[in-house]
Image 1 (cartoon, rainbow, N blue to C red):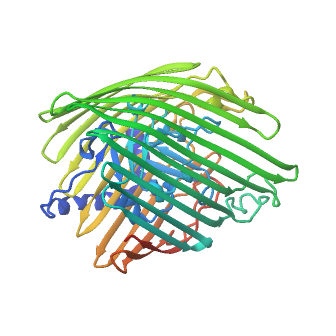
Image 2 (image 1 turned 90 degrees about the vertical axis):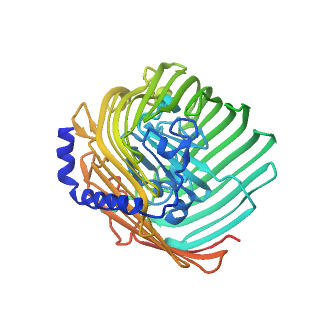
Length: 621
């Protein structure tokens, strides 16, 4: 840690001092606040079983429906950029390709789930189209950091982000929201949810459009088309379930998003036109059953699809390419209460993965593979001690099998303070595109493998939760594209060591969230910092209600980063939000994005959104 700490500390004193001071100030005030006990959220992603967030041993944070509403953010990347250990990149404005680095790992090494369904693309990117996931469809988000492949399988080296769509509960609720603002941006959403007897239902739909900005900077790429690159998104999600007997429920959930976008190519000419369309769909049918007072099970069949089609008109004429990834998942999970303090979980799953593509030049390509997995875990408490143990084995067609494990330990130093430590292993299987693409496939590829260690402290009081984690992760057999052989190979090694802090609480009737990440993500072959990774990330958000008014804002910092032969400068961003309740059912809201109109880039040559002003109406009778 000495090398990493010295390099980090010299470049990050400003956000470190700011966030540490503000985070620390939450603790005493929150501990002395109203004696009313605030329940911690219940999470499922950290262990596959329901538990309080304060009991989760992996570093887990939750973004609730209120957090999402108060942020007024449009899409998933805009919201996640403020979370500890997460860094986002974009190649332009809304709808442009987004990259996600969790604890400095590659984008393909973070697993994204929607209602438990993995969204892994099988093309040559291996990424997830999170840029098309609109927050109007989302009820809450759970973020688990670190190697958790023993719990969730391939791709969970950096961690897991699980998105939960809206579900029905209680009396019928209807909501309608409309918004307009800078760059001819328009957003409209509506939803209905509730329950009637044994039936629960939810349906939400949204439409978003904006004229956007020119994705590429003409000063850096003078030959590119300087016109604005717009974006249109239509999304819908729903759920329907029924309890046919006591503790016996069957149901269906679905989500669908279609994003249409314009984009720029760094190899294009000023008259070239590039457009694209992406569909991201999920469907789940499930049966939730309680066989006894101590034994519950869930049987589910799910499908996910990610289809991307790009078209261009250039001096060489029109062209088009298409890539479609499909995953079908059959899963049977069991939870058994061994005692009042101990729970065991076990399950089996089967995946069928497919990739179909057309490169636009007459080359059609399709391939598929199957995976089979078994997993088990146990967790519980004995006095001041807490233990979580998970093991998993994945067998993947034509790829080496992988066995992974997680061992976590917690010790309650006091009623509010807990020490936490863990050891874990993880893997990420190469995508079908990496293996079998006619242009650059390498069928001899092996899974990327990782090991991680963590130690941390957690402070949990009535109205506050704070977690500080020191982590170290090493990845071997990492995939890297070789320009000489024109294919991917398992030739790289990477590591990251650092500290991440997350804090949330209430101070003087103001809701506060803060995060800080100090890290040193490196290529162990070259001993250079990994591309586009910042050593320092920090954020602070505040939200307060007074009478019919609600006001909030957030401030975030990203340190400088290398991008190939270039260097991206550090930057601060600030946003403001406000809401006024005209009546119990009608409110007016507004926000200012990029308040100080900072010019910055998260990928070399690609512009990011300048200042924007937006206003809207929300009706919920």
